[in-house]
Length: 380
Ligand code: NAD
Image 1 (spheres, rainbow, N blue to C red):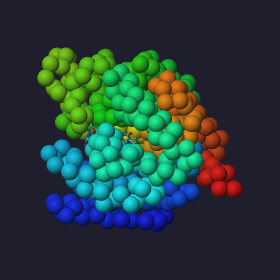
Image 2: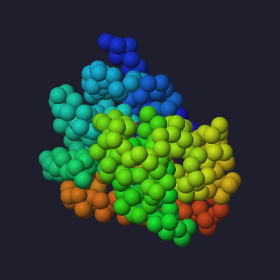
Image 3: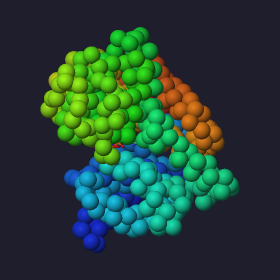
């Protein structure tokens, strides 16, 4: 991995908690990437996530470099909002000048937006908007889009999982597999996993297992995803009270080795690694989380003939949402935004799978080639 352009370290003056901002690169003076909060988060993880953001933004045609914010803290702590607020206050110069941000693991878009408002910053993508020729129109469009809800959930909590489902559908189509004959096991039931589960089940895919931080829930005939969404708390943990009696409660790591066709890791980094990859039975892995498969594990999956759709292809709809609204690719309306993102994610998935097949390379290598072509075209 190339050295990032900029690494900023932060120490919370109240708690001593550490935080980071890594800018992988600037394009046109801008960079974009969400803020992660989890205990044990390292600068190295934030840097890997920032590099992935450069690839992701290029694939959804957003002309800016990748970045990532991170705070090494438990988002379930009662004071996590205050810690996030002090972090954002310290990062305000970057937010005003060059960094557009959003939610990630352990943070919520509405918290980021409300804190920024308290700090006198109108949106999480202030820098782009302030330097655009029509800032007022863009602010209005963005605020309108951010208020949209789908199935009672905020749009920003829906789009990434929706895009993941569309990427999965395109990959199944590419290998000639009927969604109705396909089973999936999901890790994570937060913004990404919850929405992915819902949209995959709407495509006819059987979601047989869902893991959250408390364990894996499994039902071979398919879980009732709307019911699980009703029972989910703010941090994506499903209440086990009142679940159908035939649901099995398995250990947290059990989601990985089940006899399913598709794995969709949508929680933590390095979930599939050298020590557990041999348990995987699925032939398709669609990465909802950022960097959920280690390079060693991915190589072993590919050597067995499995397909891995990389994170920056499969989970790009959250980033694509901002591009759609700020670059006028979709009106700030649910149907328009979902149509644009669904088509974009499906198209990218098809293109990289076709390129990978033609050149005998992995989908990740094909996607990196595609990014290089797009970045060269946009700079030249
Ligand atoms: P979230 O905080 O909303 O949800 C995380 C989910 O993972 C929860 O259900 C939690 O219980 C579960 N979880 C946590 N640790 C776990 C473990 N060890 N085993 C099983 N489950 C565990 O997070 P999110 O926003 O859905 O993000 C999930 C992943 O997707 C992250 O890697 C994030 O970087 C990536 N991502 C998020 C977005 C977005 O728009 N939110 C966009 C692109 C990528």
